[in-house]
Length: 327
Figure 1 (spheres, rainbow, N blue to C red):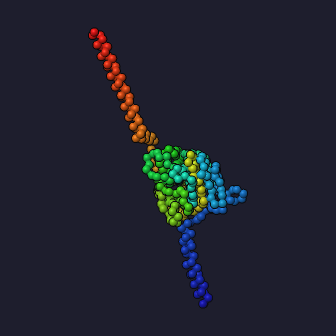
Figure 2 (cartoon, one colour):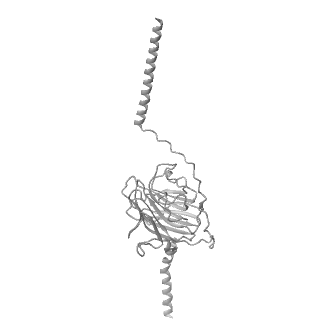
Figure 3 (spheres, helix red, strand yellow):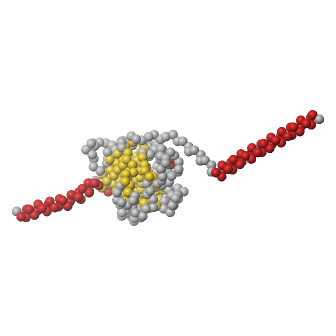
């Protein structure tokens, strides 16, 4: 009898000790290895399981560098396994850094799209894509009707028919966004992308406080299953190192209101709050500087003076000619 009591106490204590562990696991739900990228990266030889690489991408022991801090570079990494999970979270540890203090670029993008391994002008990947892009833009063209600073994080949903307008920093097709100073930190920087119950939430941890800060939240976003995750970056006349340190994918539980066996593979990407691209309006020509204005006014004044002098000379000659006729 005494031994039975000891056993019951042991079971009770074990359940108490295990409960926090289970609670912590449930907050992360289920880690899916086939959509994750963690150190050490190398598999057999120079390959990395479940991931392919494009362009200037290099794999080191500490990071996957999409672009070096050099001009005109482009690189990408793409998951080889399509995502068939309806509710998910992707957490990416990254680092954007370089020698530039005031001028740097261009940035990188995180993708959940139908077509993988596609190169193009949108931060190293294709335009007119089908799916979701989370864009971390470090360089502003100073164009378009926006008043935010850079670096800037934005979300774009595309059904394959929309153009990402670099000249307007993508503001005409974005769902939402936020300013985010994520360059040149000594500590780790993270971004979280949650897609759950047709709601998209993007959060950041840029200050090393192990706490998420919400960047944007958009409801009524429709994304199909069967698309691919990826990340790509590009540099132009300006440059940066764009490093991916880890990608962790979590499968989130279905809600009670969600149908478990619903086929979502043929959904066309869309968002209820999405607005069609506005008509492109060219920026107003910048006003002239004070010195240019002074030169312009002086030029006009000289022309006026010359015309006045010529007019006076013509009038005097005419008067002279009239007097000669009278005599």
